[in-house]
Length: 116
Image (cartoon, rainbow, N blue to C red; front, side):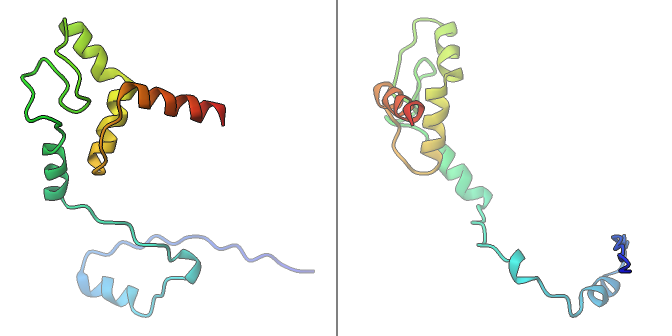
């Protein structure tokens, strides 16, 4: 008969640095757990990219400087644009340093994605 060994995780609370170092001494990461390192983005670079979210300089508040549309006829039209998937997609593209898509380009990409 083979007996199963049950392994239970052990919770360890460490309040002092020397106890922490003692616990971690000799620990190695399994090869299967090593992945590509994620790019660390600092706050300054994110703020820099957010400030660059304009096409033609700062907007007067009645146009979308990210998508290049406007002026809007009403506040409701402006709000609807900001909730639109096209606007959200363009914001994400700008954050990654890509140029925004026109509404036609965005719609054709959506059609291509839906057909695949």
